Length: 144
Image (tube, rainbow, N blue to C red; front, side):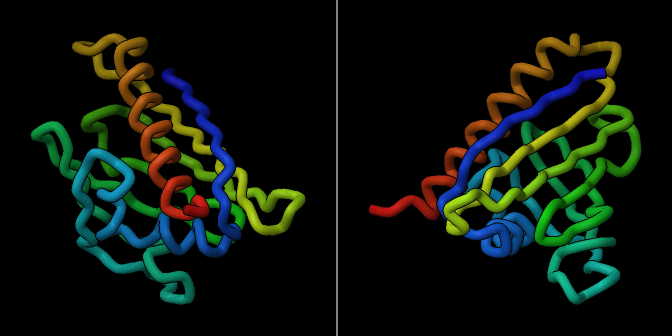
């Protein structure tokens, strides 16, 4: 299993970070991919939350992710099916910092790499992409 944990302090409150990360159509601002909602959330109390399925297009491939849970403390999601990786689980924890104006984001993903691609290669690529996305998210809220 490939196991990745990336962390970043974002200068915004957890609720704001949650709303930004659940605005699926706009996630391309942070990640090197395009996102399209193909199924709305089951519980519309949190827009883009539990039950939402999004199509992700990147590097010439397309796959689907489903939001399993979303609240002010965490977003849990998984890739639907076994492509491009198997047994994928993602969790983004949102922890209010002591200044009460910032959020520590702990982005944790784990998955099984396909046989044709070594896990260490995927770990490096995915870690780089998540760290870049978190830096872009941080820049969105950083004071000028």
